[in-house]
Amino acid sequence: MSTTPTVKVAADPVGHSGIRVDVTEKRAWCLPTGLAIVALFIVIAAIIVSSWFFIQGAIAQDSGSATTLTGIIMAGCAIVILVSVIMLSGFIVISPGESRVVQLFGTYKGTIRITGFGFTYPLSSRKKVSVRVRNFETNETKVNDYSGNPINIAAIVVWQVADTAKAQFSVENYVEFIKSQSESALRHIATQHPYDFPVDGRSSLRGSTEDISIELANEVAERVSVAGLEIVETRISSLSYAPEIAQAMLQRQQAAAIVDARETIVDGAVSMVEMALDQLEQKNIVDLDPERRAAMVSNLLVVLCSDGQTQPVINAGGLYQ
Image 1 (spheres, one colour):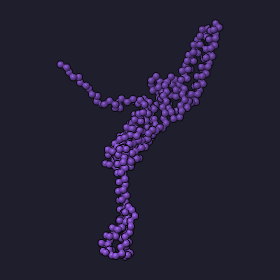
Image 2: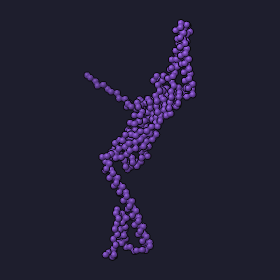
Image 3: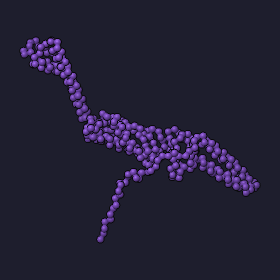
Image 4: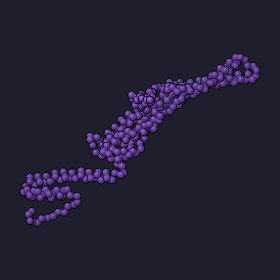
């Protein structure tokens, strides 16, 4: 009788914060420029003096006048030369806007942020990490907005490395990481907002650019915080309807603009008609009965609301002729 093995499922899915690299930037030991220059002179002097004594001992051995003390001195000089050469590997030069992540035999020893000439752990590996402000533009992405309309959108992201240790050890490549996460966040933000007009209380991508930029910056910052990156600013650089619906949406925008313009014209025309009738009555220029008043209102509205230039018609008789 065969039995089916039971599979134990982990309580938490793989990929949560428990597996992240737990490392935070700290300051690495490093001599400042002045002391580093003094140390460099000492090391060079030790190499020169030890080399001279070593050469003199070798000459004494060739001439047959070497003693046991000569051999000890030569051995000591060789050790001094070897140590001095190893010490030379600890001198570094750091330009402004750069840092060095120091590892000694695989152990993270800290980050050097001072600029200029310095001296740190010999035989250590020092990875250069730029802390300058950088920016890039995401690829133009096609996505459906909150109303389901396909749109093309892109953004510019301004960022810098805030924690060099996390940037170096928490992700494989922090430059590619921020690019992919920025495009993912941009897609998510675009699907949460309509393109043109607010819907269900959600601000539009076109009408609330500042709010959308802040929301995008916050989401990108949250996504890349694991890599020790800091978002300085984000801006929508490109926003348009997808080509397949661009013409239809343009016609809809034109129709909406015409309706808005008509509303403005009608409101202004009604105000002008009302003002004209009030002034005619106040100055007793003409006595209008309801029918004549209606005719005048009709004529004034036609003149004021017409698209083209109206042609006046002179009535030589009465209103009812």
